[in-house]
Image (tube, rainbow, N blue to C red; front, side):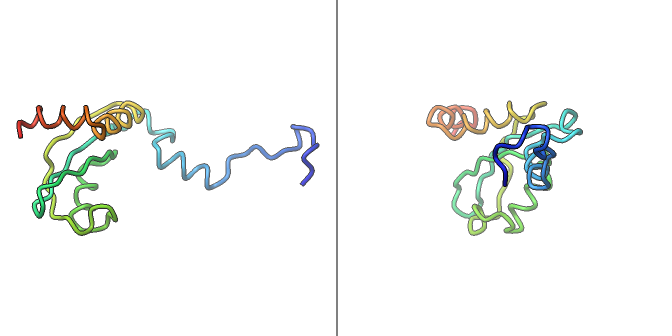
Length: 114
């Protein structure tokens, strides 16, 4: 590969891998109309919680309960304990990250009165 090539000769088109990444993180053309959810599931087996985010809450709950999710495979079935809806991917992602901190866990505990 010629690293000294003029910029005009370099291929700057997005690869399929880049397109897949953008689709998975809600950066496609339709993402501006999508709702994003941060959710908290409670295991009926061990009463532990799982915090996640998705753009399709019902489908994601079915995936968790049908053991298609690696991180919760052995802990189901789950019940939806709490969720919040967001208009943007970044707002939802930031909220999910907050819930996974010590302050976020305290907030959840107070909110759910455990």
